Amino acid sequence: MPRIRHERFDCSPGCTVEGTLRYIDGKWKGVVLYHLFEGTLRFNEIRRRIPNCTQRMLTNQLRELEADGLIARKIYPEVPPKVEYSLTPRGRSLEPVITALKVWGDANVTLAPEVAQVAA
Amino acid sequence: MPRIRHERFDCSPGCTVEGTLRYIDGKWKGVVLYHLFEGTLRFNEIRRRIPNCTQRMLTNQLRELEADGLIARKIYPEVPPKVEYSLTPRGRSLEPVITALKVWGDANVTLAPEVAQVAA
DNA sequence: GCACATAGTGTCGAAAAGGATACCGTCATG
DNA sequence: CATGACGGTATCCTTTTCGACACTATGTGC
Image (tube, rainbow over all chains, first blue to last red; front, side):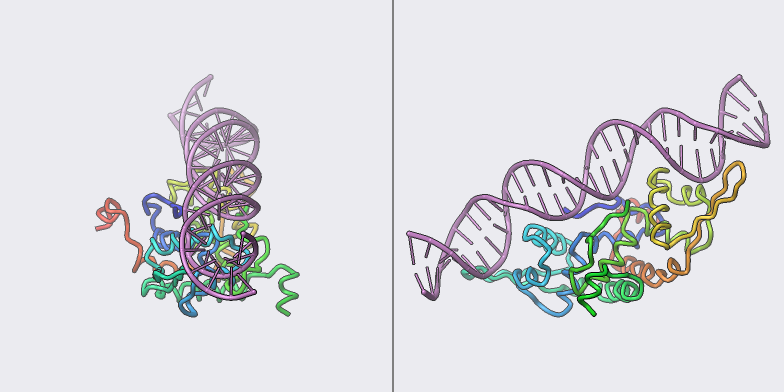
């Protein structure tokens, strides 16, 4: 269930800002979208890219993104199961937003020391 | 206390995206920032602009924004008390991000029917 | 027969976020 | 004397979020 920040967006006038946040808020949604910008991925491919996210949480986040019309879920009736996730046009339209977030973050977010070291 | 989305931003590679979200996540932060883009405001001026936010929550959000270096709090030693809030340069640098969120929201967020009616 | 991969679901519990309400001191006004 | 504006705190409680862990079904390979 998505977190309902405000039942109605009556907090004027930043309301559509909050409205957008509602879509990408969720602990792993930003990262999931980020990876899907690169192309269609299967469930476990996403999982391997986000090792800190539990299976249950990933399923949750994917379901919410799907319910919000940002990603598409395609099931192949095979065994073992095969499910592919991809962005919808609406989801892809979020790219400038994610990019803006990333640009600011690259300039302003200080990584934890040990992470910065790994990156260095 | 700010919501710690990840203790360390090791969720690569969308990490700085999440890092930015961490700053503007908080039920009323987006709206508060939005109002402060227009200029310096006193506590109760902000309060009146966001009637659905309780006093306690507003104080919380302002404290977090201040701790994150996004807004400045200036206290005038007067009585009755006077406290002014304004954006720091770092806070102002978030404007393109908030704008990106708002642009997407304006295009993609459907307002609740009764709110849309009022706006019409 | 056993483990493994796939893509999940169910249940439990801890922690965090957020809302309601009451309270604080000081000064000005009526 | 009571009320209101100002900028908060303190306390309590509920809701939401999230992580841990176990469990499911089916088919393949050893």
